[in-house]
Length: 267
Image 1 (cartoon, rainbow, N blue to C red):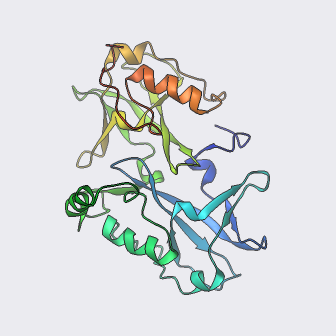
Image 2 (image 1 turned 30 degrees about the vertical axis):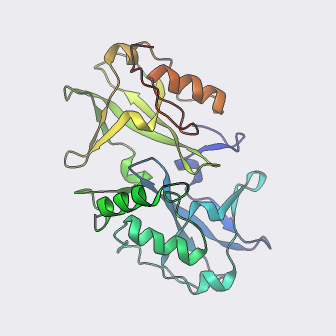
């Protein structure tokens, strides 16, 4: 598992359960889950439970990723939201999560004073088209726009021929951009790649919701020649390493603007 000595990138499992504090260092609660935007791999919101300090009971709360800042040496996240705003926030029951849509999420972001990530630098026409496409869709697996990291972990991965090639083991999160830097995949016996893990760009996957599987759009020969890593010796994740990995699979890094036109196997 990736360790905590690399503060720019952490796995979803490492982040989950982390303590959340305010500016005074008081314990507010902990991170319960990360909700992933399936369209672009961003963290749609963080699910937070508050402890006794705020007296908010057993409810959960959706908070924009931008409101958090990692305190590396404390293994905690600072939440930069005033106490009175948190006390008046609308939470939800642990057994009754909200139907997540971009329309609902816009309201959440607006309450906490943050601009939705999908609106930054997006022309008005393109934004209206996106909202029309996503309005009213469900967060259930039947027709999802958002799913939790825990729900996605363990999902089967297949190729274009429907052959089972492995499963999703983990998500590495870019703490600065608040998105999936790469998906950690284990391959099964089909490729004969043993116990190694592989980092693959989120863009290479397509969710097939009715089958609860992901389609991986990478040719078999490219996967067979990919450089994996041991389960107990994860790579040091930085943007130089990521750029090399993205280029190998034929994808432009997410912090750049355009997709490489050449496809895997043609690089």
